[in-house]
Length: 259
Length: 203
Image 1 (tube, one colour):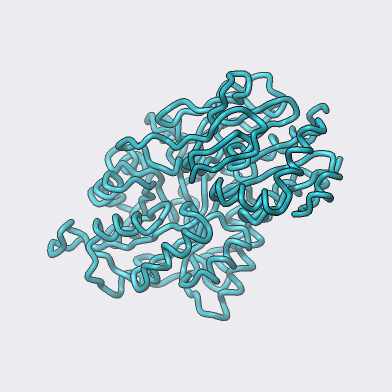
Image 2 (cartoon, rainbow over the protein chains, first blue to last red):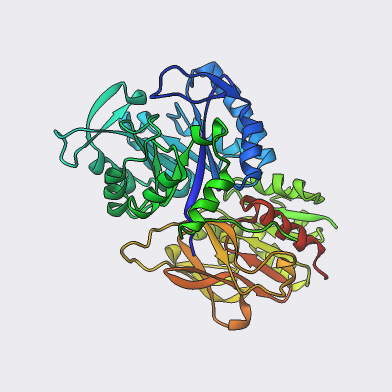
């Protein structure tokens, strides 16, 4: 049976990890390579690294981080943040990432999705989308960019379907309303999009307790769930979260080590 | 034991290389048929499109090198698309493949709720007693990313089983050839163990 994935997200600035609350007031909390290794040992299914500064000279630091991570963990991981050209995608791929995540750059230039998919395969291109509840939109959700600072005219559901058509292999759906609240994922939009597209949907934003992951898998129909602060601050380990999910009957990977 | 890793521009070999390093393998990566034919065992990865991969393999002479390597009786480990292009054909762009194992790679059925690609960790069953899975419990999860799956003609060529809408062969095996549809290099400690098992399998 296909397992529900638990993915840890690390925001990286200048080669260090941070966790932002509603994208403001980021504080440095650690070395991304060391943290990746810790989560790997706890049984995380996948990792995502977001380069939250992504200015040209700092991009090199991120590529070095990616290369170091690739040498130490043997599970898939994605890299996002400021990726706007096939050349940049290639750098990330060659450094050892399994997937690349495009967000604002894909809104500005949707062709980046089809170009990336044609060059490196659909499975390589993840669409990250930030959405905000908005009754003025057909689906009830609006796509926003630049970490929520800039509104677009895109409807969340239409954009998800368009990204799938263009060749995205997966969608990371981040609710700006829920992000940083630790009150739980936005179940309505997660379910709507997960049921509408035929590619995996990763729920993001709002996780604070293991129950929230169970809800987003059961009611939100997510294929995977992104977590950050609930493990970064040491409140839970990945293993504790997965044991809880297993006890709730959610299929998760909890294999014994080879013997 | 010296492993040759077939490089045919089908994708990134970096994760295969780092995983082989982690298990202490002595290996080299090459796109030259004569170099690869000089290795003791072959690792045959694959990412991307079966048709595009086959075109490159045929044009470069690597297809014939893999066929001769198979005929020589030395062990081959295929990974991902490598487990599909050892078959006769693939539904993916109607690719004609290497023909080492009778069978075809088929696309997952179009069905509501069955997302394609099949992406994520899924359980590999029915592998009790297979030396490639030594020390790995049947039912252990491995990382998959694929839209087509191997469908060998004969039961004896199926290696393990995985459920995703249908029950499909998690890999194929025939004589000195074993190939897995999942990515051992991205499957954590179980994947590393599988790679290490490949090196210690008897000739």
